[in-house]
Amino acid sequence: MITVLNPQALSFERARSAGADRGAEEEVDPNDVEPETRVVIARRIDVVFDLEVSTSLRAPLAVGVDTSSWTSGVLVVCLHTKNAWADPVKTVLGVHVYRIELDAEDPKQVFLGGLIAAIGVLDTSQVGASFFSTFSTPIGASVMVELVLGQSGAPSTGPNTASISIELLGRTGQAYPSDDEDD
Image (cartoon, rainbow, N blue to C red; front, top):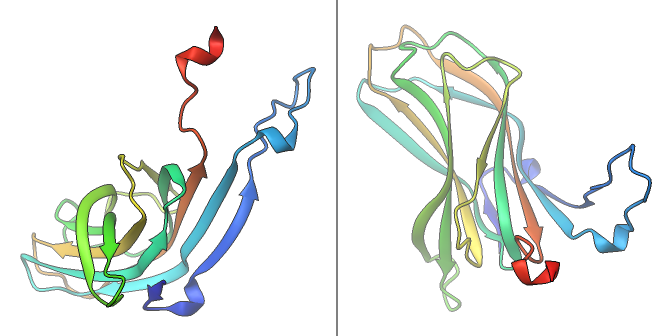
């Protein structure tokens, strides 16, 4: 089960990784490449925040994303637009991914585990940049993606704005080849 604040911003897409070097003599059989799961959490969402000094705001964007078959994962955040923020060092737009467990009898009950990926966009971040954070393991059966907004420096003279996209990329199968396979 997935609960999202903006259901239109969430989509799932199965993709195959190419994995083949264009100049290679041998082609890679697509059946030998492990599938990759791409979960689009938000596509070009506009974030506007005007917080009091020394405050933060947390908002879940997706709860219960199924990662039970993932052996590795990456959080990707793309910064499309932003204005000049109040304090370049102490204003942050963060995206956090937490390992969670859901109660089978009451799916609204979320048990928060550890933080497995985090990205912080600052005033000094360049528009058009993409940010990546590899998941720490174990990933767990499901995750929650949360937007974290913070301001701890000078008071803002107006709202801080940004437009971002958020995706999770997960790989199923064996995370790394074992040493035994070379023998």
